[in-house]
Image 1 (cartoon, rainbow, N blue to C red):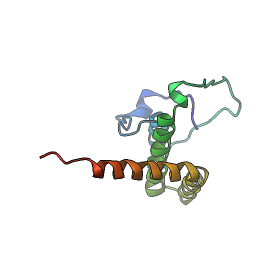
Image 2 (image 1 turned 180 degrees about the vertical axis):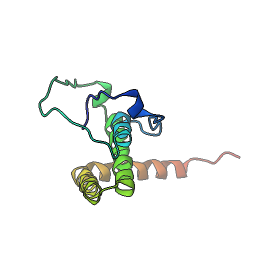
Image 3 (image 1 turned 120 degrees about the horizontal axis):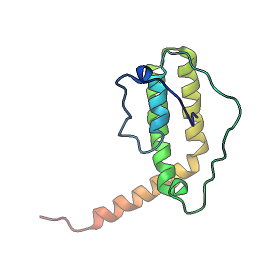
Length: 126
């Protein structure tokens, strides 16, 4: 994951953030801007990122927003990446995302079903 990037204005061009994403929009933006370009990275952490209990970043809704956004980002990479190896890496990441979250996904689907069942029992407005 890219945490900090320094880019020239000419590199960015007319690229914009994907406003449909609720999480990871900066990562998606950088992937699209740097597509086909050469870039470098520093292999050592230069800061500590702390997440506190009860913070917005650590909430259940934030975790689902991040899941949804990652699915969109990886799916886009699989469809549009210029390199077979980049598409393969994205597909592996997407598979791992589902594999790691399968239990949470099951509980989410069950809660959606219960909400749908409750809504179907409500009287309809005329």
